[in-house]
Length: 548
Image (cartoon, rainbow, N blue to C red; front, side, top):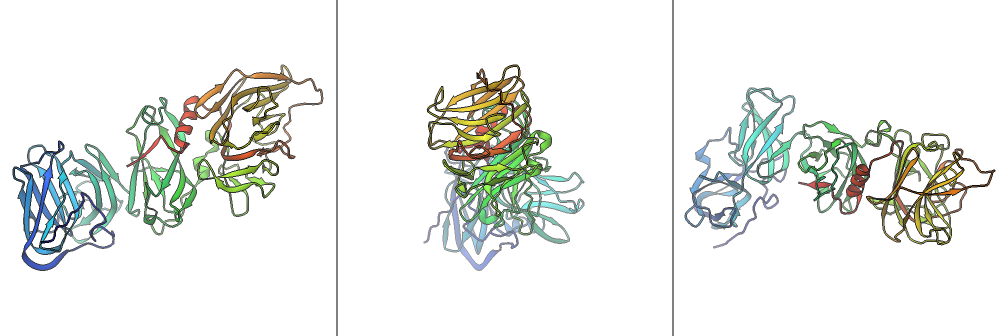
């Protein structure tokens, strides 16, 4: 006798649900001696007697197919055991329902091909619900939705735009089908994750796969108490949380929506399917503070969808974004600005490596002796912020070496505004610095400082809000009082004639040795909560986004 152990909710063990385009069939051979047996447990780990267990053909349609004639039913004994006999080999599912506790389970992909099939012990849980957002052409008179190979179904009798399938066992439900009485049903969605007492939402039938992405701002997550509006959420995809084989090789079919199926703008920063790495930015209209129940949906698996990547919509100038550079060199060598301003950066020397490992995907590495990135045409632009204006400048910085002199990171130079790495000859030495040159009431540098940690990625943010200025490193405001350095040189004046540069001054000098990633300029002073959410979301161990 051959024994075969099968996992709960396995989606890859059998041909059942392997492709939405094919309906799996229960098999062929007649033999009354094919045995199936297993054990059902409750949530405490004890056997679960009085549980109704059904052996359902993998191709079963609960609306069109005969009822009990196609299903074998048993009730577990005092040891939680069930036993079936069938005369057909093939693919089956096991569906179970506790008669008193109303808990449920579903085991998919049970392949019966030998004398006896022993199914691994499975545990009953509190079920959930699937909400199916219906396509516009659905038949509201004769239409229905169902889970293939189960008795789970729902009829569509009104034009609400959605249907509910109740009492769905938790775990991965391989596929949802849509049908009507006079046509062949079709697969609407693969791989729906259902959790206890929760509602899984499926929509956009042209996209075969979806995931729920919860935004956790509670203390166990990003730990942000305030609501943040129009926030660009970073979604990192890896081999551990995403199957790149289920999407287009280019990632063009990646889409995001709100829970009510409202589309959300997204931009793909990088898509490297071969190595299983991608980063996408999603503009979420409201990220709720101190909340873990809010989610967005990610869709993929549409072989003909054109690219939906749109950085201009994500980093909207109407929300204050005036330049956003992900620090990846494009095909023509430029470092592109994602906003509508198109303040693209032009590397001045090949020693600027735009394919280096960044804090978020790819970044730019600077040699410390040559090269910078110049944002041409920005001298008299929206990036020429006035004295005591309102703006935010941020970047991920990894300083490899500190020199005796300063190193220019990001900005318009020493006579307007800049982020710098102060050298050993500065007083105080070895500091990140945010400085703005002012002419009134006194001429000189208004400077905020914070110690540098070498060879570590740090999120550095400068905020100017009128006469107040703040320097943040990671999510901590390290300096808000500042030091003023007077300038007695009458030849100096506030300079608005220089372009923004990254990695050194406009004409060379103060060259940076290290890496820079995700440079942003905003014409609004961002709040501490916004800055903290950026850091908690963008750090390597993202604390905001939870995949389900």
